Image 1: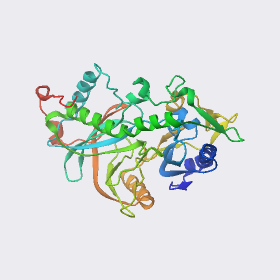
Image 2: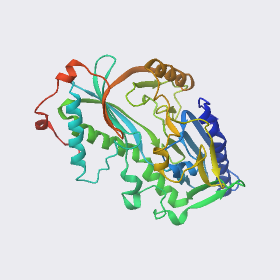
Image 3: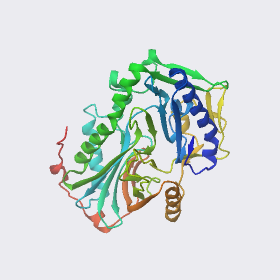
Image 4: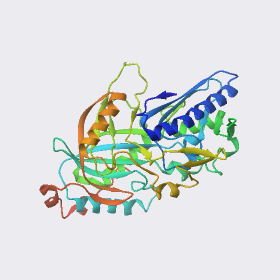
Length: 384
């Protein structure tokens, strides 16, 4: 295991279980390849618990990069629960009021409800944020996944439900302590990876569609889209870490600054440069992670069987949610010591729409008094 975490209490509680996960992957690959092959899990500075009990029960957590080499037979560990998630950043050509921003988002949400577009900007840690850079440039940040490919597209869905198209090919290996790894192989794995490796581009496109519909005449240009969850290729899965080389957005906490960073390259031949996508989610003390009865996941002595238990208890919180701005900056600096890079811009959030509703974080006279009372006339939808 490659440890690039901060080694905080949550991460130290997770590491032994992640080591078991890597051993399980090595065991499965060795069986498939007559003793050949390899696997390695890299844990990142934002390693933490997720809101997905299926993934965690299978031994995978947010803030890790899972790599394998199965030379003879294609292989996919299915409890990585692969999808495509990322962040898009756009500049705007003028400011708008927070009221208009919320109205535009609501209008777009109603529009999308007529179609198969799965609106997930208000789920989990996803959001749409309107903000301004340090140089005063208004901008928008979108964080969401191509959620349609979880369960909604039939034979192209990827989530490991009991009735998924690859269900009959699921295989399992176990350690003596009862921990397990579920995986698929052969043509099923090839088909899975073909679908999954196309999702970053699909999510990029669906972000553009939402941005054009919401911001309309205000939209100036796209800065970038960076995925942080998905399959970069058929041999790896990124779970909450970006792998693009040019830049990425480091998300901190709700309402806090978003840092735009250029990673440092150690060589021009690097295939991927791994960086965290945020601060991650930590457990409250005593930070205890167990697999009770060898299989049932328990966080701080609470058995976790569904997502609601995670979201409605006080056993976890986002790192940095209670931090002041200077503490946020200090934490970013700690991350950059592990994952070297240069902050080239900072976005101060003004307003956002997320799972907790609508928020206004900062007020500017121009923004509060600005906007276009006739904005509905300019609404357009050109990319479908």
